[in-house]
Image 1 (tube, rainbow, N blue to C red):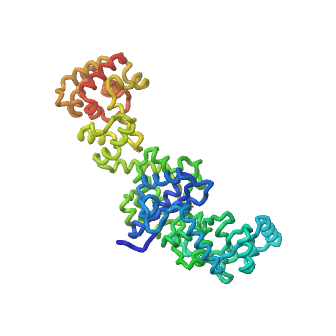
Image 2 (cartoon, rainbow, N blue to C red):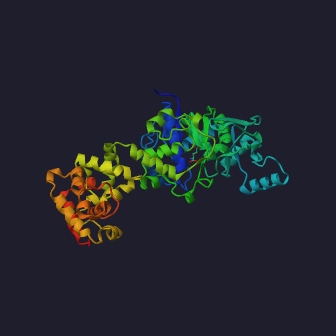
Image 3 (cartoon, rainbow, N blue to C red):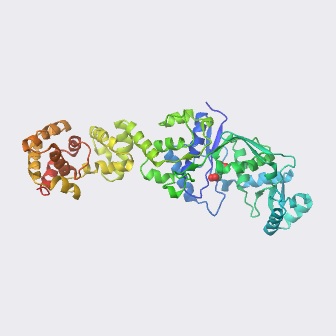
Length: 493
Ligand code: GLU
């Protein structure tokens, strides 16, 4: 069902995509999806000193990793392109010229010194209005034209209608917000270097792109009255605004580097699942019903609503994010885990050249023993990497050897284990048979069960902590298990 809802996410490529930006993108995406509308990605790269193509690429990659597909924007195109502001300069110029011709904007020739002097004077006489004093507003049009043509530097200012009154915004999150008319000055829409200001370019674009809802961080709430003035001057309908609250760190301060990783790719690299990450960020300021925490992407995309966005700042809690990630991993079926987690992780860690070489049943068995033991994707190799070693390449952890193998009687344990395991027919090499073969050893050797199993575990895995021994040994294979035990005898006493 197509609807008229059109929203945009408009990052400035002055840095990486951060948690706050990612949440804004998620809300816009989910709102578009929930309403059968269009999600537009626009690159606000008008700040030439701080915008880079590399950052744009990083942002696009992060958006893809988050799974936030855009209907119009870079690389996919669309009817309202181009979708980078630096490629839209002509549109801003045309819009400004139109306002100039209609007498809704005027050139201002005031020097920075003049402006500063006016500001100081207003301050001294305690004028409640400290904005631009409208000096150039009264310059006759012909005279202004002549000065412009003569090459005198100027900015373009918007003419706020004298009778405009307070600007009232019915914000979908904050409710009614009233901006005092006295606060509104004739602000600059084009700088003297010929570049548009943020408030102007944004509105020209949002109007041209037919944006119906502007969902963004509430650091932009204070820009909204000026943007409303621009919409009115352009004769374009004002969209619905929804300003979402800040994300705070545990100390109640605005989230920043001090609180740890802030960029999306740092979370990707740390081993979070994008579904879990999106779910967690969505809950920073929005709720489905006030209690549900695990909200799959399709539910978010069908149930998201502006009404359930909270006015209060949300607190970023890395522990909850970790919990969410583990929850997502655990809810996967073994097949899904094998496919989405094991395959890429094993290949990336260089443990296997291609996961295709592992049989389907081994892969499922591996998934069943690894899944409950990882909270993060990057932990996969640590949990099961030893399975993919050989008797020659396995590394023995010194502490584990000391605790589990280098003790009186352990050599005898390995001897007994080797002969019990060796008696299992090759075709019968299953966790069940392995467990059954090892089971009688403690009694036969008159040793504690723990000591026996620890010795075999360290011999086969190189470490004291591993997934269940039978399953692990099944995956290692009979010949390799026996070879590992043989090698470990050299470490046992
Ligand atoms: N480029 C602006 C930013 O990144 C967009 C603000 C807006 O959504 O209007 O803050």
